[in-house]
Image (cartoon, rainbow, N blue to C red; front, side):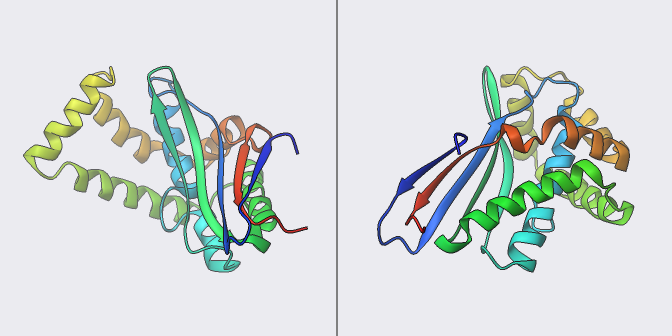
Length: 187
């Protein structure tokens, strides 16, 4: 497949998998709510990827999806390691979870649990004078507006199950994923 590269590592017990695609810059109007979608997909321990790939299938101990940002581009990245034999089925499950977010409305209880988690983590991130100063330094050096943190809280609180599906359809596109796998190649 043209969207995937394999790096042969003979004798490797496991394969490292990195999947990625360009994604929204921090100043994009959908960015704050898309962070909620990404957390649901693979951004915390109760995420869809962790529940499916780790808990249900047992393919890996850890899998995560997050964003990394540069001055003129941003990328969504999915990282994991697994036994060589699970590489293909694991990637298929990543695609499956993307498709699920495109077609099914997330359960309001699942979304509520995620919102509580994200709000709690945000509060924990701003619990000291130093962490607040760090947050403002991040906002200042990233060119964010003064209301960035308020809008972030509002985005988490206000996102609906319909918006989750719409944003997943727009920005979680399996056909846009590029992948690199390093490990022992199995036929």
